[in-house]
Length: 314
Image (spheres, rainbow, N blue to C red):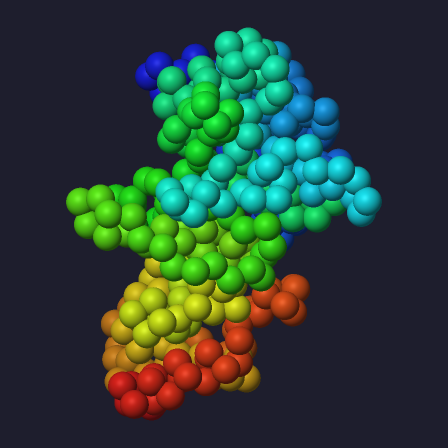
């Protein structure tokens, strides 16, 4: 299907599809060698990104496909502000510096065209030297010629009505202060950033079921915002939307030893395969991030599990 106003849509959609598989294959941490290999489309090799350029347009496209932030090797210089400060706290968006040189030509003009067409692009976020988390789709919400930067956003599936809340830290385990933006209603600027880093930590798989479909996954809080839960990856678990609803309703819980518990009233229900799959989680171990520093805090789990024991019949 062709997206109206974007002659590049077929290639763009194929790039997103391939990256979905790569994110699963490499548990959310894709090596540059695989990104550099590109992908096949209609008998041609299409590049995802360029080693030399941060803003990239393949020769087969008319507007930018991706932007890239590099983590420099030890001792190397920082070239752009976004390598140190990717998060724009005022807007809650990702701040990405435009290329040096003219704004009306080259890579900057190609990125401007993607902005004007309102098409999604890919953000290759460096997590360590030569390793990237491919965040897509992201949209260019603001093209700032004065500050020579763009602000990027991605949707959070839990709050589909919020489009401008995606941002990322300089460290996967960094804690962010909560900020608020006044729009038609208050919205948490950190929410999509939090959801993104949690899903990335789990390799874009549900910690309960292993479900690998990114569009059905959320980064859920262990201790909710309403209870002053910290905005840190250790206060999150990647879940499908079904498991998130069950977790929030205290129908399932996780103890400090990462063991799943199902409420007794749900165990006693009999109503088809979906319910049976939830009941089958009882006493199973949670799937955990490979990086121990990103695993759920046992302190937060203990606090949450006490609530589960009070509110669930177990």
